[in-house]
Image (tube, rainbow, N blue to C red; front, side, top):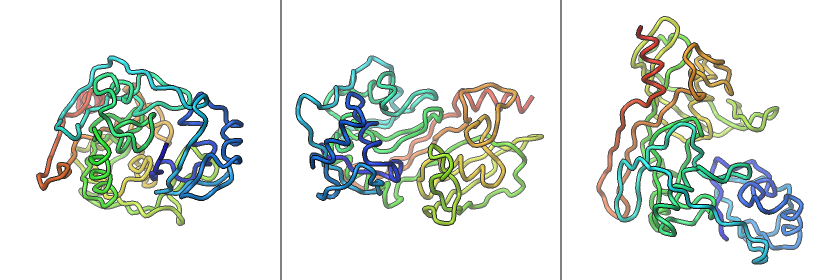
Length: 301
């Protein structure tokens, strides 16, 4: 199996990452495979503690009896916004994981994709991430591109890497933002004290978000955000950094608002990209999701 590391998985230990995508293998077994030379990074041997970097290539070959179990296809409805012979765009609901993890292997977007498309999905990122080009957090809803084959995957991944794909989000944040439109340029890296979180730090990766105010309320602001880069938790981290955390984002300090929702009120509502193997520009946009409508109704009343 060949796996390429994207920015969402860099700075993870090699053994931890492989445990995450191979839940039937213990971490100690994976460490033994690494030490035995069954696993290579960029065609060289590394220690289990090696910290992954973006674009690393993992060559992961283990005995057949130890290979990861198949992911179970599940008949879960998909909200397909766009589809052609090489790809599709789905509207992922809030509360759904994009792909399985070591702890959760069912009811994810990948389980649903496998039921509808079977093996007609790219496998560049391994069985646990069939078709997946980019991700949304569990409680962030909205548009996701899916590749049906490896050539389309590479075509679209190159667009994402070169910032050709335009992604826009809607969010409701705490506090009143005075500027109508501005940029946030704080570099983002992993929080050294809480590795499951990201933070703005001087030695982080350059990150840029454009913020546009849509509507102001007594204690909150409704905004549109355009991602110029695509770092892990970028919007949530950037909004926290200017003291306007996303509504109900308890991980990044917003606390629970009066309107209860599944964590952050954040939606990927607009996507623009070049159709695989051509020059046609596809532009997609969806209506505000249930969480945003619910909070807006309360704030406007």
